[in-house]
Image (tube, rainbow, N blue to C red; front, side):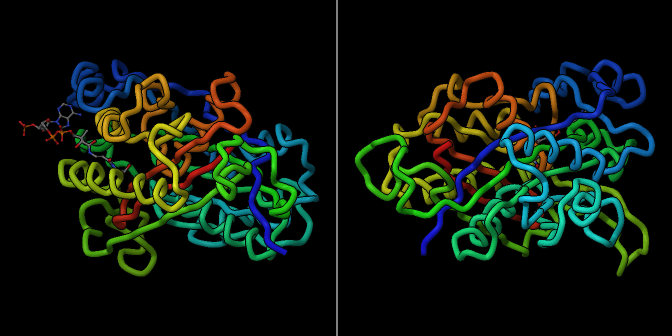
Length: 334
Ligand code: UT7
């Protein structure tokens, strides 16, 4: 039997503490004006002392299960996309598994930095399509505040902490008829239509952390050549969104929503322009959340689903680009 992944619900969690640009400019040589005009960011949430990535992931995961009306005991796979795990091992997903009440099944992390949620979506969708998992909790969770060099104004102003999650369930292809009814057969059903992931390791040094267990035995700090990453992001995202549409025989005009990774409003503007989408159809959270890496897409999805913008059967395009370099896209009929 062939399966497709239906998305049953979503949830998110942001730490209580909000740090505004104004507050940051008291300890870093920067200004609200510079940060807003270069990135679109106004504030970020920062995890409390002692609050770990798994704490954020757990809360987002619980909220997603509640929204989906699914009990943790029904979940047979937890995937956590993170670059800021609690520990080098075990996986953050395994820690969530122990606390959420999931019995049996499997749990592991996926590491593709800011593209982590799209990579996780691809992995989860493939597990479901081939019948190896039935109910997947996919979480993106990060505490980037822990790996920032707070003396480097070129990077420390750009990131924040948070977590988001979705619940995916296997649905037999032949039961999947209540979609958008665009008359295109295969792509009219609900769920994940396709995922597309890429990487180019030759550019690893444009965005990396200068530490790790097998090199420095320290955690290290984030280093970025912002201008070069920006350049690659604009090109790679433009190409992968077309790839996702082409793979499904869909046009740009068919899209209801763009839910992009929230790194920089200027990058998002460029992708929306390329797609010919008005900003009314783009979910933007970068102003409030800053860049939460693998958490940014599920956080943005949760905002737009809960405020009623994204509705059942809407065609939603997800895309991201990050360290690796990695990039990817996913097309979902909600
Ligand atoms: O999620 C993973 C992917 N990451 C990204 O997508 C990030 C992509 N890159 C970017 O978003 C942008 O490149 C940045 C927001 C990081 C930087 O914007 P930019 O327009 O590329 O600025 P820049 O790095 O070229 O810096 C311009 C100037 C420099 O001064 P000079 O050399 O022109 O005198 C910087 O020193 O801005 C200065 N600057 C700052 N000034 C005030 C850099 N950071 C700051 C700061 N406050 N925080």
